[in-house]
Image (cartoon, rainbow, N blue to C red; front, side, top):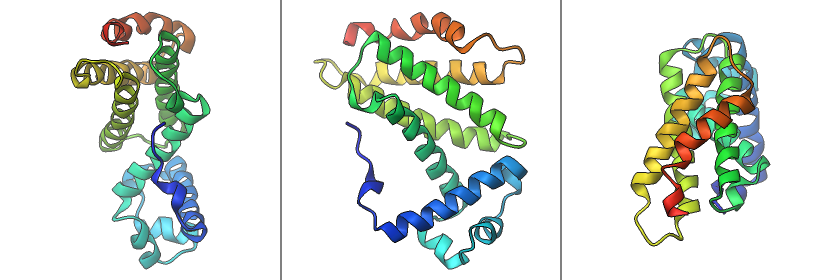
Length: 188
């Protein structure tokens, strides 16, 4: 299972981070990332700036943490973090990434290129770690196949989330799945 460093945090730290995250996510829906300031977040969360900086270096670190936490919850909800590679699990991972990105784009006011780049890096790191975890028992190096699959999954999900006329998610994933699976089947 993938480790979660937040499990051992003091309850007060968790509560304060929760306030900051909730405020930040609310502001993302209202204003868009580029226009949000640390002061906006602290005002909405009703914490002071020193408290914010005790938890996050800046709003970029907060975005990374926020996206990471939301996506990890999605992975955990589908129990993909506690299983091994299979065609069904890979299909569910593709479905999770597509659905997550579509929701991010529809729930964020004015998504901007910088915002999308930050989200991309965070999601690709988690997908790569998960695929590496799944493939770790194979006897051959898995870095390249996990990298190729990560980029393919994210690229397909990004394409889906930006489509004006989207097919059903299941139809899209059915079409995309063989393109990703072919890179991983020899390692399973």
